[in-house]
Length: 361
Image (tube, rainbow, N blue to C red; front, side):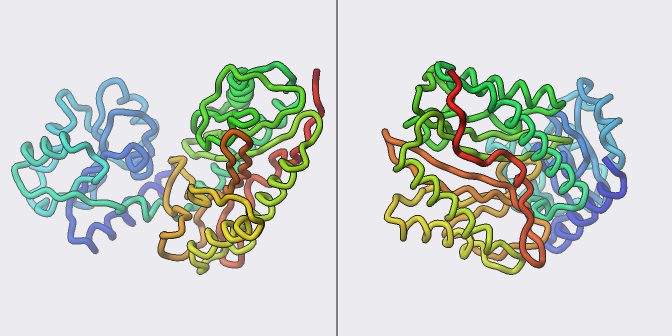
């Protein structure tokens, strides 16, 4: 990770801490540890205190941390994370207003309060709000992740055939992502026929029929950054009703994407997709229209009817409306979109999009 980038992030977090009257933050969320230090490993905390950044890890990750963390002081612990964090805090008498990320477990929060023996508060959104605006390096990484995912799907589609199972297809796609030097950003979803009405369906041994439909929700991760794509396909003879549903979802997504721009309210974009489906007399999906994307697969902002605020240039979000009819079908189309001052850029435009696949026997 570039030294200048990490220093800039630590300064941004420090400014937010000062604004909130916090002079020590214990960072326990893995994505936030990565963001503020560059570290990609597990079982580690970060701290920002006295204008300095610390990574608290153990011997399993010390060598990795030295390579990945150009700014943070690396503390190799020989005791629990809580005790190691308490040792650092005791060295800084100015650390009076101490906060720990609210994502920490209740048990660990209690242990921190006991070990530090001073007032400790929970803090939320300190780093997540800063993370929502991507810098050039982050945008480049997500674009590469999207490109890898698109290429993996293009290499997978020709091998789809009748009789293969959902699990088999998911495994082939995952293998292609690995061959391209990446890894999955989340567990691949493959759903045939009516199984696609389950938004987060887990692949089964259900076999692909002669005239069938396929929903694939997948993503690749590159340099710690995720992509997230959903595509739907028809194999064999197209079903006219399914094609109608697909067309409605496609147009609903286009209506939402057309509105994405810095300064536009998030609620307006969410409403655009829902209203198009509603006017088509088809069931409106219950999940969000999309979500932020970055180190985590789900980040701020979240595109929901109740979400307040506006889009900001540099945010990357998914736009993923869907129509679900239990026992009958499910269609969802999802693309990754970069918000700009003048509109948006679809980062997954090159991912295979035509719903009609040749029926391979």
